Amino acid sequence: MSYVRYVAIVIAFALSASASFLVDPYTLGLLISIVTYVTLVASWNIISGYVGYLFLGAAAFYGLGAYVVPLTSTFVNWYLAIPLAGVICFVVAFVIGIPFLRIRGPYFIIATYAFAALISNVVLYLEHQITGTIGRYITIQGPQEIYFAALLVAFLAVIVASSIKDTKFGLGLLSIKGNEDAAAASGVDTTLYKLFAFGVTALFMGMAGAAVIPRLGYIDNTIAFAAGISFNTLVMGVLGGAGSILGGVASAIILSLLFEIFFSSADPFAYLVALGCLLFVAIFFMPGGLGQLFSRFSVRRSQPKMITPDLGTARTTDLSRETQQQSHVNG
Amino acid sequence: MVDAAGVVNLLFGGLVIGSLYALVSVGLTLLYGAASMSNLAQGEFVMVGGYLAYWLFTAMKVSPLLSLVLVAVAVAGLGAVLYLGIFNRVYARELSTAETQSTTLLLTFAIIMILSNLVALIFTPDYKSYAVLTNVVEFGGVKAMVSRLASPMVAIPVTIVFWLILKKTWFGRGIRCVIEDRDAARVVGVNVTRVYLACFMIGLSMAAVTGVLFSMIFPMTPYFGIEYTMASFVAIILGTVGSVPGALVGGLIIGLAESTLVFYLAPALKIAIIYTILIVVLLVKPSGIFAR
Image (tube, rainbow over all chains, first blue to last red):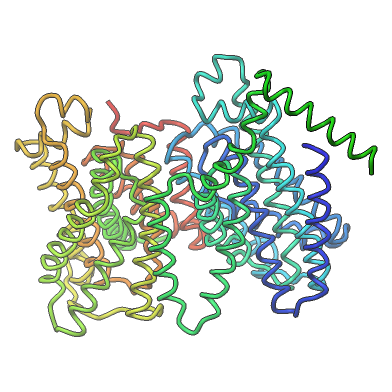
């Protein structure tokens, strides 16, 4: 990542963090759910966008991360519970990934949905067996604290997800998407790469769950493992364009806003039908999602970089650097 | 723990649920096996069939037994419209099988949103049910309501007749040919487009008929579809994708497993049981029990 990008990230973080002081509580609540979905979609893109395994189980890790908060509340505080939830989800994903990531194609999508439903059911069952009650209370945190925590997690997720692409690890992941057998044949340890990618996806999803859950003060398996979370994440990821973090962030923001408008209206069903139609049209006509639009820009921008061996371009860059230096001296 | 009659009752309950799963799964195995259509909205067509029967019964006083035919025809028409209007354009893109599967998966994902919310808009999201054929018949110590008896008595013969059509007729041979190898089928002169059209019509109308039978027994919400889709995916993976007897046996196994294991373990684990079966099958024998 270039120096400019770091500055841009810091400015974006400062701006979005300071936004919380300017808005009313309702808008702050909306901002919290937006940054949560930004985290979920950015991390979803690692396993689904880069590796190409469409993941319909975001609720599993979100819920698992959320459950870490009440279960560990007696010995760690909430701030420490967030990274702890991430680590636990990473380990769980790594272990269940060993059998699950052998499943390819549409079966993976069904199996991961099954996993989320399974874990929700098992948590419900164990909770009832062990404690005799269903649902746990959680110490409520202020909306400001929750927003900062969720925002920090979202920025981490976006930075990690978008910088992975340029590493050797990221190239390996993309090669698995291209052709898994060929990737394995050319020396990529596909099993380990997939497990790490799945683990990182789970890490951020778990942290998102742990960061947001104290908002409600209460948790049970239907809140933590709501199937809607898995579905929304996949829809946002697909509409944003699988593999495009920027597209994913944009679609997470747009769709969260749409959902908020629709669900707060008196009769949400007509809107949801309209949203379904919109989704259908988008998938039908724009298989690459919003990312298609962004990649068109970035290709144009990065083209000079790609043809640097060409002397003409090299000279122009040199000249521009000279002009810059001159102007710097003059200034 | 339970006496003999209790066990028989338990098995009968499993047979009822299982035959519903079987019928919807036969439709899905046809769509997925022949047309590479990963229909995530299969359960939504079950739901639509159920609500159509509910509407026909409450508003028009039509008996659900007649609705079976009416709904089957109506949804077959809907399937034809969906195929000719939209999905044949997806197939015209000449994608690979995997790409077709993922594109149809995402498109049917949108169909879930449209259908379930459309039904919620029309019928409200509350539970709906109606009482019909409530007279009880008794045979061999087992009492059963006629409405429950209707499920296996319709679903299993329909499945078997359909299987015979696949085995014995030229039309069925064409479908089996496409399930086996789409490109080879085209080479030897099978009209693949017509097979796809037939799969859409038959596959979706089987789901809708399942819905009519379901609505006679259980209360419905507009959102029960997804559980049905998942259960029938488990059934077709268990019984090998593309195999009609496999879907029948897979559906029955899941129904029986659900009713007996829920009874002996815990009702809270109902969903967990289905998905444990799925994960075990995917790991132990991903090609299913009817694989050759």
